[in-house]
Length: 249
Image 1 (cartoon, rainbow, N blue to C red):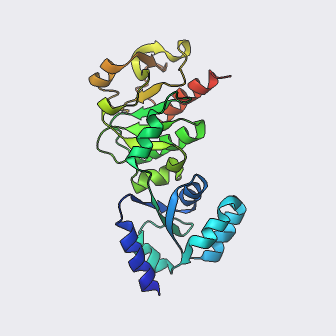
Image 2: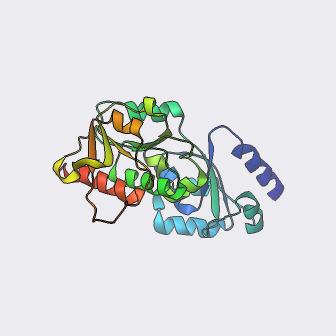
């Protein structure tokens, strides 16, 4: 029986669009926000359902239907960095077409966060978690990093499924006024962000590219004390989204 479960998992993880959810919280959010979860494996089915009953009663019925128990050593063969909650799942990421439709829909009532060529998987996950919390329309990235990488999903706690997350090129950015965070810009305290803005952030080391700056409708600066070179990417995004939200009172 265990061998059959493992074989079925191996087949499912190779299906187009399959993504790994490692731990209870990514799984909880995928279920809560309508993600297509196909398989759930756990080292302790009773403990998983009890945890869900305590933290997320709204997903208990779905977990009861999906969860299959597998010994922990077999689980570690499928996900070597097994989360302490002892559960892994396979879900299907929304299609590129669906994400782009959500990102491009107008009028837009909340900004899209643009991350130009991000490098750190954990930071991207944290940004997606922020975007979901603030109700942003979505997060788009440029460059080679896959925003649906398992480490990014872990960092976002599965909140990819609560917003639109996609990788694009600069010419493929959604429509809307482009506000680029850059030290040469206007003080953020003097400039409200419109609901349909694209809020663009570069890397901590290099900032934004000349190409992105050339596309900007406005450059925006967050004041820093002398000698401080940069803020953490997720911190900068949090400040930008909070600034947008505070203008809606």
